[in-house]
Image (cartoon, rainbow, N blue to C red; front, side, top):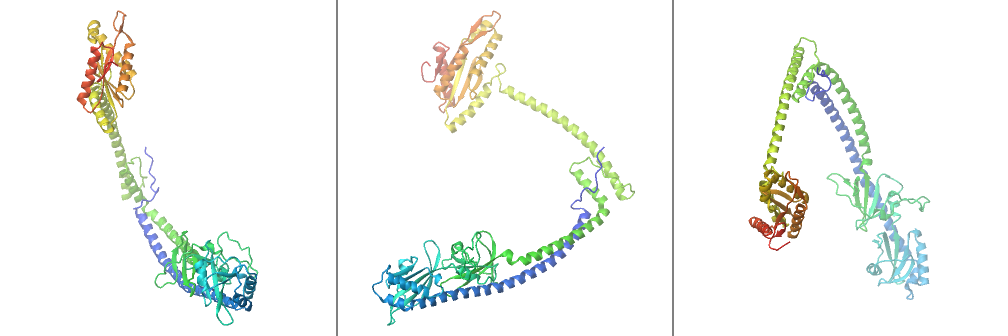
Length: 574
């Protein structure tokens, strides 16, 4: 008996219960979705407006601080260039790069301004760009820039990059004599280390990274410390200077233009991080301040709102769906059982029965009729499977008979070698192959010497036995790649693939010796008979008919020259 089918095992996708549950689920979901979308969109719009107001204000403050610093540097250089000692030394024509007087005057000038620790190098340049005196680190300016700075008559501030890629600020101011003429130019080299602290100011907007970008598009300094950076050196205020090294931001990139109506762009960095950012150009030096913030951090309130709304919506949807399921399952369970049972029968699953509801209504009658139908289908299926099995057995027997007939059609009945028909077909395939590849192909015609005399003297039975045994000897002497076939009567043929004339002659001699070394007991006299063969060898040269004729002529010469020998096409004895 088949196992009863559990009606409530699963809910079909297209069942009535599923449709009701789906309707309740979809209604609840759409309502929750609309409310959620309105809430999320409102929160997102509010944050966008706040960011669009905050970033421009932050960039305005940062650019103002940087421009104020540049103005301070320029004013400071004017004050240093106006010190009396430096003016007196610069007016002297006895200065040189290593002049003690010049170095002393520059040292006093370095200490005269504020802050003195910011200057790494001071130098006096002649109008030709030559260094008249220097203090601190080597200036290391390109000759063209030094010549340009030596000709200045007004204070100047500009940025450069040394060969190492590190950014520097070059501040210049003319040193004037008592008559007002320019006698030299004071040049100071300042690092950009403190610009990161200047961007960060007193720590406002710690989540937003502010990066100063030079006119060449590479970073100068940043307000945040890169991962793995340290704050080991104290700043002037006694705290730790945590601004990032300028070289750490050499790959900075300006953001794309913001969309219409927005002040901030949303884009991905080269490392794949999604950020929001905006940029503002300074009024001098063609520097740009870039403000960037992680997209996740900027819109973290939206994520929090989305999470809470999602959890609330999920609970509501699941609760209403569960209630709908419990109500509809009790109503449509019998109908689903019949529907699922009919579907499984259409898939070929006949070993099932629907539990009888024991009712006299339409559902009960339909259930009993359904079970009667499945029992009849199982019976018919068993009969069909038995008939199919019988047909399969008959088909297998027919295939085996056809295989035997096919094998007999290409096999010599006496020697069990391939026959003349199979050899001709195989030769056709080999000739096509060697015509494509150019490989050598040889043929050996083997004839049993004095076979007719032996057959007449010993009888046909002994002759048949001799043919069978010689065929076995030659088959054992050949290579696996060669084809041995009975060509007719006492003649055999060997087709040697990938074998030139010398190799074919060697193979023919091997076959001849194998036969000549054997003795045969062929009749009741118990007398051993010695049998030999003659072999003709030829190589294929593009003509199938000439191929056979050459081998036949070689075999004829072997017979005419004493038998029990091998002759090849176009030569004498082998």
